[in-house]
Amino acid sequence: MANLKLTDVGKAYGGTVEVLKNINLDIKTGELIVFVGPSGCGKSTLLRMIAGLEQITSGTLEIDGTVVNDVPPSERGIAMVFQSYALYPHMTVYDNMAFALRLAKKPEGEIRKAVEAAAAKLDLTQYLDRLPKALSGGQRQRVAIGRSIVRDPKVFLFDEPLSNLDAALRVATRIEIAQLKEQMPESTMIYVTHDQVEAMTLATRIVVLANKGIAQVGSPLELYERPKSEFVAQFIGSPAMNLLDGEIVGTGEQTRVQVDGEGIAVSNVPTEAGDMGKRVRIGIRPEDFVETDGESIYDGRVDYIEALGEVTILYFERRTNGDQVLAKLAGIHDEVRGKDVKLTADPAKVHIFHDGKSLLYR
Image (cartoon, rainbow, N blue to C red; front, side):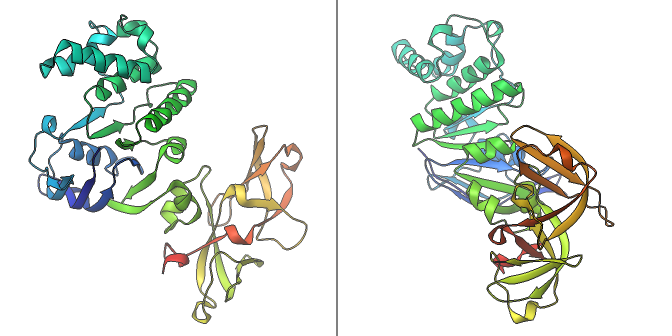
């Protein structure tokens, strides 16, 4: 389908209110790229700039080697699916999906062939004669996606397409989007979401946006296992990674770190002699904690629990600095509420941060 290249792309309103700056990103044909980040970080703005619905203030956007900064949206070969379905309520599913092709004055036979092919991919064939009001939210969203497919665009853009659906429909529609991508392996897709599960399960690569720029780009597992910063470490993963104030007390291939007198040898982050005594932040994901009767990295009293059946989330009393520590243990642990629990972690899954950045990437 299409390669996209963003070079030093920026967006400012009124020449003074800067929203995005220095966005550099290469998107290859067939990728499904997911933009994530905190509210107000510019995810949807960046998507709309790619679509041509927002003007690019600085930098260039190329599609297949052609700069398209000043190309109208209708001529970029891009289709966009919004969180609101934006279907015409008086038109049938068939007519909604056929509308753009009729505007382009395509032959009716070609239109029917395109609509029926898209409907088959999205399991909408039996609904082609229905009005949108007779469909569920998930079915309406599939119609909106189908309306994009029939245009055979170079790039598909999804702006939080599942945010209006209930939990069960979100899961079902997310799976349908994943299956649709498998059916269209050459399609380039860019997807904006707040949902961690959507990002982790759908993305070829995730782009984490923060502070007006890109904090990190990588595969879902790369961002989960090797975050470059404290921000990315806490943003990717739910519940968020625990960050504990500590100190490096031993260097080398097995780095020894200490928290409140408790310690652990870390094999994930080799250190050098100059790191000895350095104050650091030690990152441990809640799911990487395990109970121990021996040497621990954290010792605290369980203040509250969430028993979810397959796992139990332990909330520990807040530390003197106000930090909340969470552990996610397999199975049921009702008996630990109000008790002191000692925790350790797999040495290969402990992260060390200094000045907000992972020591893995210095």
